[in-house]
Amino acid sequence: MKTNSILTRGLILSLAFLLLSVALVCAFLQEDESPVADAAVLKQGSKGDLVKTVQTKLIKWGYLSGKADGIFGAKTKAAVIKFQRKNGLTADGIIGTRTAQALGISLSSNTSSSSQTTSSTDLNLLARVVYGEARGEPYTGQVAVAAVVLNRVKSSSFPNTVAGVVYQSGAFDCVSDGQINLTPNQSAYNAARDALNGWDPTYGCLFYYNPRTATSKWMLSRTVKLNIGNHAFC
Picture 1 (tube, rainbow, N blue to C red):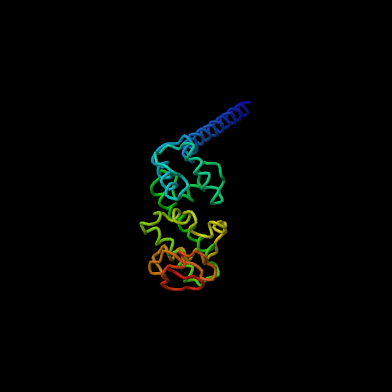
Picture 2 (picture 1 turned 60 degrees about the horizontal axis):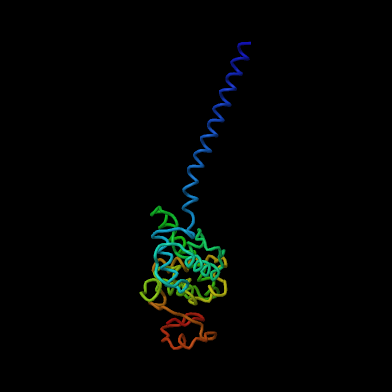
């Protein structure tokens, strides 16, 4: 009888300890998830410097008019929806992870993590541009396309982020026709990485076009510095 009583008490204590552990884990998860969920998006009603940064980008790219005041109102939401529709994103006016990446911003407050995320985002976006614009071109020509994007980032005449340059209205055909959303191959990633590491086969060019298909008189009037594959760089 004593043995049974001891075993019963032991089982009760073990069960109580297990239930307490589960409760503590659940409480920890709830505390950990709440602030992340709140910080995961920018939407109508949001305020602050990050909203101002978004507005500045949207104004520069022609999606929003007026001044960047840091208040996410109805006009900002409408501009975000236009940007999302243009770039094949869910057009809900809410800036989540994918829209933030397209805008070239990070929703994270962790500086180190944000820097790593931005670097990874730049590589992926550049690779998509290379694949959409130059797959089938010689490898040097693929690096050259990525280099043009980076040269624009450095130029005061263009947005100062990779995403800003790529998604500037009318800048790249692959954005207009949706090929920016295709999955890049390894060659595209390698070319993007080489350009990010400093290889510029164009020696500073800001534009390129295919002479056989280009129709823009302004583009055709540019001085061509060199030709690589099917592209003229100027």
